Amino acid sequence: MSNISGTSPQPSPTSGEGVKNVLIYAEVTPDNYVHTVTFELANKALELAGKFDNAQISALLICKNGLAEKYKEAFINSGFDKVYVAENDRFTHYSTELFAKTAIDILNEVKPDIFLIGATIQGRDLAPRISTSLHTGLTADCTRLDINEKGQLAATRPTFGGQLMATILCKKLPQMATVRPKVFKPLPQNVVKNTEFIYFEPKINDIRRKVEFVEFEKYIQSSINELDSAEIIVAGGKGMKNEAGFLLLKKLASVLKGTVGASRGAVEIGLAPQDIQIGQTGKTVSPKLYIACGISGAIQHLVGIEGANRIIAVNTDPNAPIFDNCDCGIVGDAFEVIPKLTEKFK
Ligand SMILES: Cc1cc2nc3c(=O)[nH]c(=O)nc-3n(C[C@H](O)[C@H](O)[C@H](O)COP(=O)(O)OP(=O)(O)OC[C@H]3O[C@@H](n4cnc5c(N)ncnc54)[C@H](O)[C@@H]3O)c2cc1C
Image: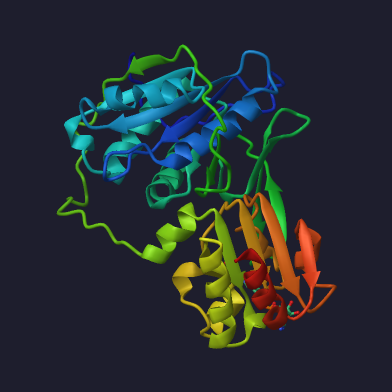
């Protein structure tokens, strides 16, 4: 594969030909795993590509020498038609300059219609640099992706401080979007493809890193990790009022073998630590069951729980917006309802 570098303006996505190629950035984590968001995006990309005949999904993998071999099976089982690989020992640790240059070179060659990136720390660093270089648009932190009637990527995200959901179209190719982990679900089962692995020789000899890697130290916040993997979350809002209220939630969570989360309202009045806040400025979660207690259901909270399979809400106010966004609603005082639920589930 040859290597073309450049920043020429990209063509428009409204040519009417529809989507031919959805490319996903396959992020490698510092401990050398392909980030799970890659496979969540693959599921979504398959759905988007499925709206067009012969549309393909592919991955862009930048990693140290020899690592791609280790990931091959994961890509083959996740519906990828092609994987563009750039390996080099200078990619052992993430570097904005080296990764951006390589990604831009590959994008100039592959010319995807859509390029999706996980809204992780790495993705948030890389995506704007790439979109600026390619003179294309980037919709960050999307909560929904679709294809509109003109065949364009319709990327939806909260805007105006979360008061509105805006659907944003990109005028140039590639149409770029970042999506937070857990917004989409990974593939429910393997989609095995005859994946083609295309190796790309990175042209990075002249690129100097502005930041040198010194040491990687993993910052472990146990509650955050628990929220990431919890199948059941019992979340409390301002309506839980005090420490005793949150203790009731902890008891219910413990009986259900789940974990506790919180709304920003609860965090702001000191009922819960910020690291268990769920929503637009907190975590995005996708449990099987989400029990929202004393949470009004503001849009900024709801965007964090869109991936939940089932939502049960407990609230004294029958007009609370959470009741329009749940599978089962209990109008009542959480201080009475939660102990009863805990007893029943025991
Ligand atoms: C830019 C921005 C980002 C934001 N990000 C987030 C975010 O990430 N996460 C988030 O949650 N919010 C976020 N917010 C705040 C959001 O708009 C709401 O203010 C917040 O979610 C409200 O929290 P709450 O539902 O706990 O409190 P409230 O809205 O005050 O609701 C409390 C609820 O408890 C009910 N209640 C009271 N007593 C009881 C009782 N005894 N039993 C049962 N129910 C009872 C009440 O009827 C009420 O519905 C953000 C806001 C902005 C502007």
